Amino acid sequence: MRRRRDQPNCVRFLDRLPALILLGLGLVGCDDKKPDAPSATRSRSQSVVASATPSVGVPASATAQPGPNLKKKRVLCAGQLSTPGRAVPEAEFERAAAPGAALPASALANNGWVWVNFWAAWCAPCKEEIPRLKSWEARLKQQGQKFRVAFISLDDDERQLRELLASQPQTGLKSSLWLKEGDARGKFLGAAGLGEDPELPSHFLIDPRGKIRCAFSGAVEDSDYAALSEIVSGS
Image (cartoon, rainbow, N blue to C red; front, side):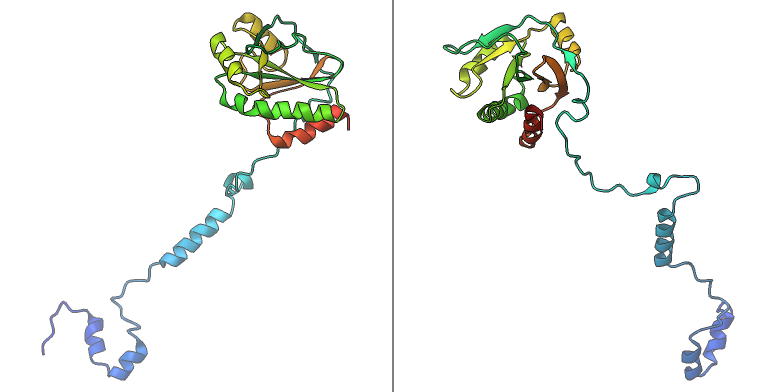
């Protein structure tokens, strides 16, 4: 049978070989076969090696894969207690209380430790941590420590503030100091180290000498009690 002229020379050559030689040679030497291209597996391997080796002059940290986002454990008042502290700014507080409840003391500093908590009726984390702060106060007093929590509302709506105090359970927050909106409030908060418009809740801690030793913003957690107990007890 006559073959077409456009058939490759290698095909005509292989057709003349015995079947045994064809199987043994495995089509080796066909001059029409294109050079092998790199396999996909090799290409992926090369890319992995290249990405794992930092470029010259590039810090290893710039090419390293990010690890898990581990939350760093907070230490209450860390790095602040070694300073002498600052004086408590002067301010004229309003006082608010639920019907039948006693008004809070207007003075912040006394001869013991005072935790000052800034909160508002519209602030969900503030309301969530109020029972926690009151329980800390009770526990430290039971241990014989001179410690109290002073709550200062930063509400702009007096009716909202009074409604929340009235809705609290008997063991809840029934009264609070109140720092009204205005320049005086901003100056007080700024002088206390919280900034003129801090995130709520915010806090500062007054030592028995009447100095602010620690100020920070954000809600407290149950795990913060151990550090507070050490601060108050002086251990």
